[in-house]
Amino acid sequence: MKYYLLFGPPGAGKGTQAKLMVEKYNFHHVSTGDLLRKEIAAGTELGKIAKQLIDNGNFVDDSIVVQMIENEIAGNPNVAGFIFDGFPRTLPQAEILDKMLAEKNQEVNKVLSIIIPDEMVFERILHRATIENRKDDTDKSIIQTRIDLYHNKTMPLIEYYSAQGKYQEICGIGTVEEIFQKISDNL
Ligand code: ADP
Image (tube, rainbow, N blue to C red; front, side, top):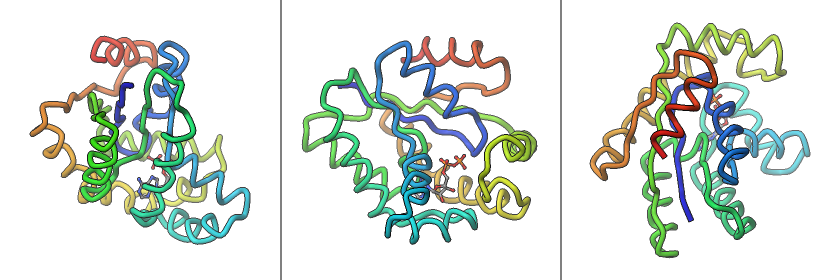
């Protein structure tokens, strides 16, 4: 079983690329953002807790997303691999994931980080706001909160995975196909 992580700031195109990876390689795509939005839409207790945090651009608790990841791994035993998109986002999440996989004699195979500049993050998210109905996409200060969290909480993971020799950057500027080609070359 392969385990790939997709990194990159909000709006880098992780979801778009993950879909193409699913079609080509029979991987299972796990987006913690999508899973949380499903909980919110279904009006579950978890969704109610998550909504406030997400709408304001903050992270939900590590324990919640870790539980969701465990469920996804357990519920999909017959796939060729997993693509985690939006997870791990903090150092504790990364450490828990490593432990969880080690217990199954598995490990993260590679971390693919799609890089775009902050100005482009704003541009793409404000554009997405006109297509998808995400409250966290509509307000510049909320987008800035998400960018800041990415820099402060998620970027330390670059060091963590570089030390394991698993970190690979992919330039996120170009056509969807061009970026997918670069990802495919690096799997
Ligand atoms: P983005 O497009 O900003 O990368 P996502 O769709 O991946 O956003 O996630 C949306 C929101 O869901 C995040 O801003 C955060 O509130 C919450 N979230 C998603 N994944 C995690 C995680 N691993 N840990 C904590 N919060 C998360």
